[in-house]
Length: 323
Image (cartoon, rainbow, N blue to C red; front, side, top):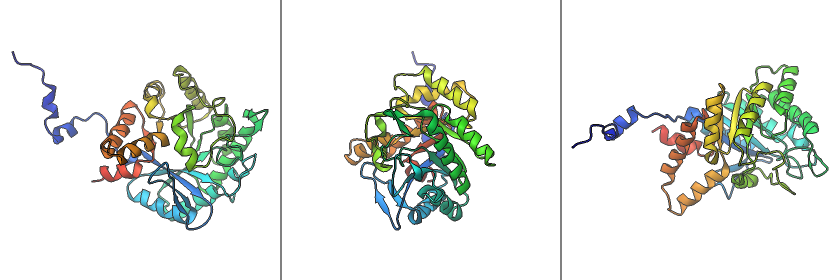
């Protein structure tokens, strides 16, 4: 008795596999994070994130051109200031490192879509995401500074702002401030679902943003919570978010799927530093086929429902997809 149903017929060769493939992956889906720092001629590799760098403005302009030449449409810009203080004044300084980089990149690569991270942790001496009062981040006073930071990015030429702080009400505060300053057309990509994850470890080196005391569990989400994610997304959409993000991606594919199924807005997912570094390390040791695992991971994030993927693999994946 021979089987009637033979699914293997549609797996026979690469042509038919490509024809019936359910999930597509393209450089258009990628956003590439970049880290800009002070100085000139700086290109310092991040030891825990091979292939990623802290770069001064003059060097990051060249890097941005390379990213755009690969068909990657957008970058996410993080800043490392020369000096930090308790109120993170470098975050909203009109002459700050990110503001300078935005102008330089837009002048050099006008077609590249520049998204900026809006948060305080890279700029505060204590490494937390806002103003500290009584040993914790004070929500409402932090909102004023986040709004000021977002406006400063828009004035410098940013195409989109992306608040990552997880303060309650920050999307509303930023939307109001942008509109008041005449930036009604600037979209907000909200880190709506950001978990207090151990996968951020390498990023803390990259952005020099490790907390100097305690942790961020009083404002980032509990990794055990799934339903809460939908409430966070709903609130941010009500406040004016144009795109919502789930971060990290791999341990939260179920959450990405829930968000995509529940809300009719574009969904982004952040394939974070720890996810990247684990694959890089295992690939270097020869334990895995790094390229195949990279593509499998990115495809899984898309399959779960992400329209956009923020990933340090963007350049490597784009090169493979462009072949």
